[in-house]
Image 1 (cartoon, rainbow, N blue to C red):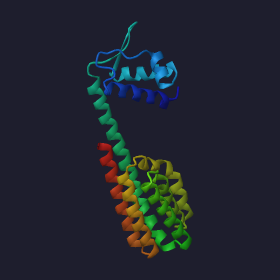
Image 2: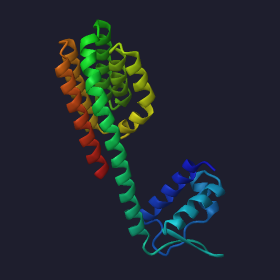
Image 3: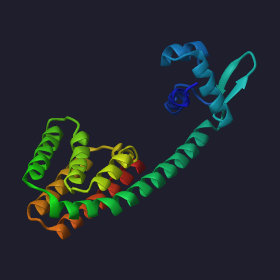
Image 4: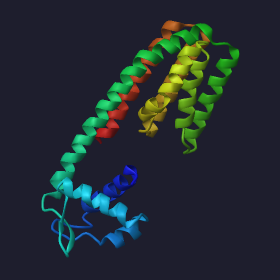
Length: 224
């Protein structure tokens, strides 16, 4: 059993309860019905139900099925609050790393980047703007902007380190909003201007402010 699969079913059942599709003390649809609804195996549904029973959100009555507990709503709210706390702590730790690395990367790039690198960053910034204006997904161009910046530091160890951390850093890009995209474009423009001027201090400062602003926007989005 792949944990991620039954966790998704667990989440979907929880959403059904939150939406009032099954009321407190109400009977959950059968395993067969849920398996058909979610397009998974009955065994996956069974594992999800077992997890929700352990959390006190469901109770099983022999021969009768699975029922929503009277205090399921309170339990769900408590679990969401706990998960939110974990997610915010994780993102705080990731941004601590980004704040250590990325201003230094920007400062070094201001000393080393050539016209080819500036043109590539300018093109990525333009694609990021176009994606936002046309309702596309600017996140990929955001990621590539930072990746390209590292590459043009000329430091292969730094570039290798950044690639190694990429999957972890990607967690900080998972929360995307138009406000975040607009912020990124604004500060990518400032960073690129500093690079064109060959100003390490301005590049580092713009990147540091970029990281601070993105972290605040993400935390605000999560809380909402």
